[in-house]
Amino acid sequence: MRGVPVRCYASRPRSVVEVLAQARTRSGDDVLLVDPERSSATTYDGFARLVEGAALTLRATGLSTGDRVALLVRNGLEAAVGIWACARAGLVHVGLPVDAPPARLAELVELTGPRLLLTSAELRPTAHDAVGRVAAGPQVVDAAEVLLSRESGWRDSEPLPDEDVTYSLIATSGTTGRPKAVRVTGRMTGHAAEAYVRTLGLTPVDRTAIHLPFAWVSGHVTQLTPAMLSGGSAVTMASFTAPLLVQVAAEHRVTWLDVVPSIWELLLRSDAFSQAVLPQVRLAVFGGAPAAPGTLERVRERMPQLRLFDVYALSETCAPVTVLADAEAGRRPGSVGRPMGYVDLRVVAPDGTDVPRGEPGELRLRSPTVTPGYWGDEALAVEDGWFATGDLGRLDDEGYLHVGGRAVDLIIRGGVNIYPAEVERALLATGQLSDAVAVGVPSGLSGHNVGVAVVARPGVRPDVTVLRTAVREALGAHAVPQRLRVVEELPRNRNGKPDRAAALLLLVDPASTEQPPPADARRPGPAPARPPSS
Image (cartoon, rainbow, N blue to C red):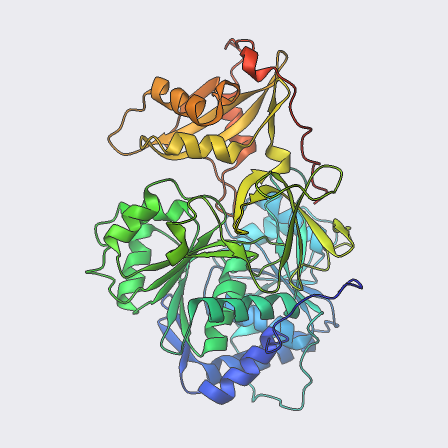
């Protein structure tokens, strides 16, 4: 790829259409998708017939190969059929987040330029509001009418998509600037599905609950496609609460979950999240942010049968970059595991040279799962096949990766680099907090001060002195938070990650005073990592 040899799974599926084509012949009468909102259970063969019918309907509207089709629908049968139908018809699916305001949706519509926007009656006013803000916006059409009103027998003579064709666009969070749309190919999804089936050991008896949006990577790349590849099944959730996830998992015999770490704390607040209620839930994948110290231990106490897999991945790869299996977690606390077999990983200094093992730097990777780019031909930061992730991290002596946050989030105080993730880990290790986010607060004295927004554990009143002492002892005086605010809930972006820009607004106080950095914080420090270009 890009002129550089890369390792690939020899047995990988080349597209989501190929996965479905093979699954329908192997598991045609078995249930693939349960949609509680419709009180429906769709078999593999039934799903394939809907996909084929929807693909023919879409092409009959006059759409041409490569045209974009946007979906603004909640998780359910329509959302799943829409993705596979677009891929089958040679079109490009654009997932729109249902919780986004019209202005944000208008940005994504303008960026991706869909010809059609398929939506539900519930969300049609929002769709029209968004489209009305865009010059020559797409036609707004009822999703069910296009996607669920026609069935057709599978056309075996129809060629399957090439694995390097873009079939879907995944919007990035856009919290640090204008949004981008990551181009997703069959090569990326095929490796992701194969990786999850192999790593988790998925079988036809396994079932997952899809509560993360289909507009994200999680819904169809890391859950429905692996389930389909293994001959398993999935239950869709149109909305999320922790009690509802527990209820769905119990009622529908769910065996594996895919969550973001903040959901663990929500689940732990439910007494029903226990082995007694969910004995069949045996696997869980999580990633996107560090879990608070002690959280996973409490999860294991409640669910001793549960095997946990900590995954480091990016929207630009879809497939896991590293995985930390449960058996390794005790030996490598704070790590996100070792690289997958199809990933080469480097840690580099600002000048692009490799740093010694154990030293921090920017993560670069080479993999067949790296996106060909962003929609609109925006350049991807790739040099000699190496993708610059913009993430900071280090590799330990056994090759386990420890992620330190985004390069653009690096705090530089008095010339010393401070990694937000390390401050957050030190704070959470006190046991007083359930969540924390550290940011650099601009300072005329020191460049940045460390500011933190924290969430207390239920029934705990955080001791600020203890929190600051914990950071001082773990990292030194230069990393001690100068500003600290206790909040009920951290602001998060639509991917469930802490919204650092919003957290900074919580910490900016014009009336506050700041102290000069301590003497040991004013020593010369290493140059900051190069800000990512993506």
